[in-house]
Length: 202
Image (cartoon, rainbow, N blue to C red; front, side, top):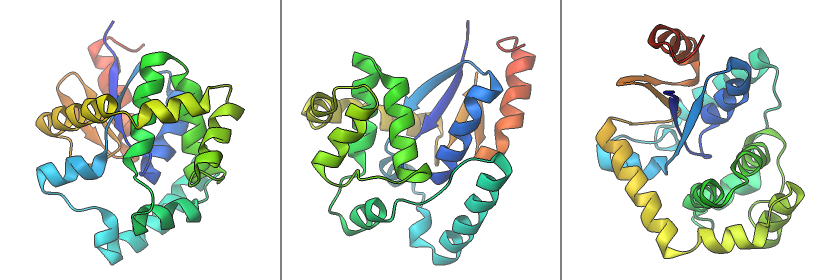
């Protein structure tokens, strides 16, 4: 059976928001992990922090969507500061997802990382904090983060980025149903409708 492709990166608050709705939607999801800033560089797009008015709007808009979805929403300020200062490589979390997809435990990893960054903030900046996060989710935290730092995973992530750019991805969250692309958390209804028409979702 076909599935809906979901391109995401944990740096996106809109990705977090729409992810909270996927289980409610019942859609069959194929998770496509990417590093969106790398993809943006390939296709010539600019992230929101480089446009202060857009960033300010997004902060208010995401709060509105969280209220509508009735989900917890709180930016992990320590994580954000570490990302913006270059003290923490944002690709680490995407790399960890690839490890979890390969070795098992992806659902637990995916939920834990989303919540720690955008839902219920906790330490993901320090190595000990990241290990504890995954251990608490029932995973082998140390092993996952060690594998995430391996050059083979970095190469796999780069290949994912290149494929996404070639597909036409320019931001996240992005969905594909067949060859039809939908960008943004507010396009989920269109995704559902398209999946229904294609027969992959009743």
